[in-house]
Image 1 (cartoon, one colour):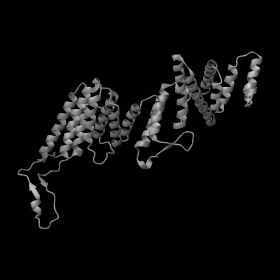
Image 2 (cartoon, one colour):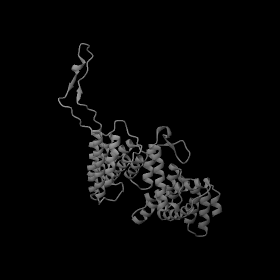
Image 3 (cartoon, rainbow, N blue to C red):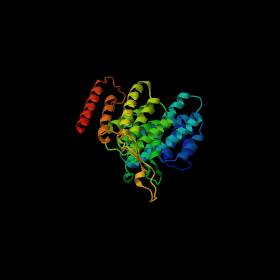
Length: 392
């Protein structure tokens, strides 16, 4: 029977079935061997045509045997690239066959769940190769640590393409099958979230922190705004809180940042902290409140440092030559100086050092002892007072 099926002729299946009928044997063995031959040669339409001609019981039995064979094939990582392509082709064919079985199954919920798990397994293996040029064996697929490393590596690669400079960025990716199809980074991220059964919110949260690690403040704020607009829940609150914390830490240590022109970064950090406080969990609420208070203080100091008003304001100047230019100025009765003597480049790191002392960047850990923070504030206030007295 195997010899007849290996001939690959149009009449091979009928000839093999005639032999089995002559010996009064079950035809399932022939269906299985023929489907295995078709799957190995990437003939998905022929596989479906054969399954449609079978009864439901025969189709289920044949497909389950075929699934066992395919799992054994993809169990280990192949060394030969050509063999790897054939295994990916088998995984795609199995995904098509299992979808056909799911459409025709009725009643048994447990069997449907088992088929859905198998479908997800084969689709993940096939799509990782097609869209990310990564082959993962069944053994690795069942290892959570390997999947986590793979997921983090792909997010890192996508983040690198999104948040690096335009001169270093490629606009599109080609898929793993080396075709001319181009896949955008956003599409890859969406497919990545589906493959690893993560929500778009999970991927966006990862990207917000990745963008910040690249120093790209504009992209980080945009992602956080989209998260807050579309997913107002505890998870988003935690992400906004950690982004605000991390920004404070980076400003404290003068880490180079890519800040959009005209952005008031202290005000943005304060807004992130306030948004986090409105949607965070009760466990994080006190830390959010503390962060709001400290970032508000930093915002006020920054606003004062930027004042360049020396006690006068100008009217709109005119081009008429008969006007006295001195009449265009209006002086106040008393000189008022609302700005701080120190430059904001010197003051702001101190403010954010105080902020990070109150609410250190340590996800999931609350600050209970504030005594060191109070000592730090007294130390810096003393330095400022001594500095002002020296200037005077």
